[in-house]
Length: 337
Image (tube, rainbow, N blue to C red; front, side, top):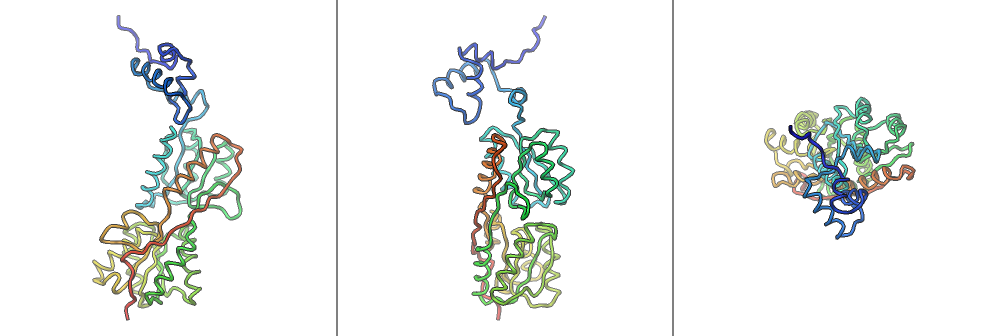
């Protein structure tokens, strides 16, 4: 009769290696302090027995799932994949897995909260809008939250934020020095906090030069939404010489529409700028002038902040602010006469 399947456990490895079960657990815990001799002895025994740690069993012991929820908007652009790659790598280094939740509208994030609870996520990083009430509900379930590029003015929470104020002023000064005086805004969604903040900074920087946008249109952050918006700007008949887009994807879409459909030159006829500093914006066909967010440093800060609060729930709230950088590309030039 065949022998029933029996899964190898950490106790089996401990007996073969001649160490304690807790020593085996430490050897498989990322970042744990273990001597080289101990690790070699345990790994040798584990290899002989074809042992792999059982994450579910470990979670039952530690009362942690070792999973975190990352909430992003489904208004996907090249910025979010870069963010997700960075977050996944940094959590993986800590032995933590990422559950991804996409939302169609930022205000729809509430319907995903129950799934976050069902999977017993140890924490949440939200790159989509969370209301104060939703934030309170997560805290009521003892789930720490870090808001990525979002924050509340009147409610204490953990957040990592890119301050683009100085960089936006530099961008507007750059355009002014090229002789631009007639600006159009290519806004993102009206319900987006990031869009509102970026456009506020742009208007503020223009006001310092006693200028205001001569016209504006709206997109949804996606590349394809820029085509209609740019046609609306053109049809307004305001003789715009520079378009300021709320993100790089719309700036790239605007640039292609201006060149390939309208038959105009960028930057000869119209200059185009964006926000985010995504890798695709540096492609030779775009070389966008933009404001780059320090994604690597922001994700490192967000992961460290969340893990600290997963391990020490009483840690006080904090807001970490990192500075965006103005990057000059070839999508801007001298304003046409």
